[in-house]
Length: 103
Image 1 (cartoon, helix red, strand yellow):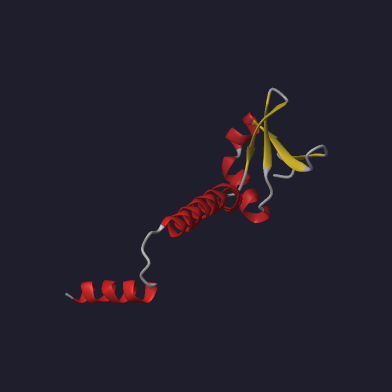
Image 2 (tube, helix red, strand yellow):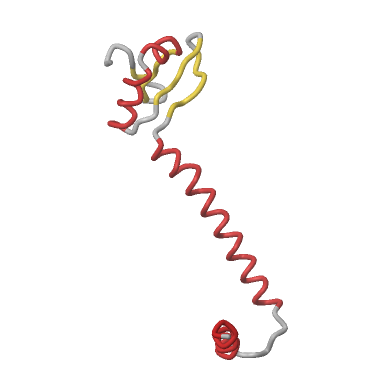
C-alpha cells in the first residue's frame, strides 16, 4: 500500500490516482480508518477530489451544520423573548403548563 499512496509536499497529504483507487479501494479505506488523514485523488495527474474519513466529515460538515442551526434557534428564541408582550412571570406560565398536562 505504501507504493500505491504517495505524499504530496504542497498539501502534505497522501495522493492516489483514480486507477489505483479502483484497484485498491479497500486498502485506501483501511488507511483512512487507521490514519484519519485525507487522501488527494488525482485524475490525469491533476487534483480532482479529496477523500476524508467519516469522522472528519462529521466534524467538518454535520457538526458545523448542527451548530449553525442551534445558533439560529437561539437567535429566534431571544428575538421572541424580546417581542413577548406577556407580562406574566415564567413561574406562573410553567405552573399553568404543568396543570394543563396533568388534565
